Length: 166
Image (tube, rainbow, N blue to C red; front, side, top):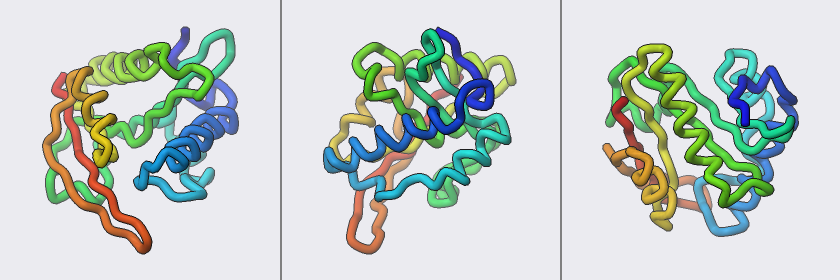
């Protein structure tokens, strides 16, 4: 397997992994996402800024992750304001590669990139109403540093901001 910048592979294929998994999560009751999400232009902008990465196997995209240096959603800025971190703004495993430890490899790859750039923390936010994602990230070293109720027209959900010290 190879971990590479998305602009080194097919950007639309990588984006399609994100769309397919997002639709599956919506269909499974995750209220964090709405259709359509996210806009391709946002994903493409991150690709141009070298923030989107893909894990590939024989040219097939197994998973994708967006890593933004010193970025964080504005909704979390009252909880976290330090610098020298990476924010994992999205992490998705292709439907075809579920249950093959791809998520773990993506997280480990983020840690390696962080170390190579002398970054000492990873942040990720996740939907926690089902507690699955919070437990999932905890097993790889993340701890919850804050949580909030998000309210939007027609939906609300709880989310956590999680941190991993490197």
